[in-house]
Image (cartoon, rainbow, N blue to C red; front, side, top):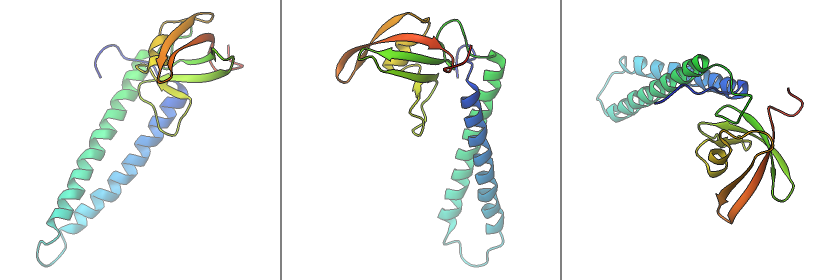
Length: 158
């Protein structure tokens, strides 16, 4: 994760902490199967299965390390900006058709979180550095679109 540490919202931090706890629990289950496999008697017909479990353990360790690094870097970065849109910001936008939506700018989107957009998505990138009252133009599959920054922070915050 190159560059300056980027802040994350409380919601994103909590989601990462939950994911890390789930991964650590899964790691414990996988590690236990590797320890138990040494007690097996007979041929090594399932050596491939053991290799798969060892590979799964390495992948879990890597993701746990990534999450831990991200949480540490976020703590070093401090809270998300409140003066302009940045990574970790919660921003309410009004689209060209008049509808409003509150979004969170994140590093990576979670499939289950429709209100999270990445900073490198067309809309996310256009919003970075903007302040309430600014209007941005960005590309969509249907063509160019506009959105106005209504506010920073969740509705009712400030």
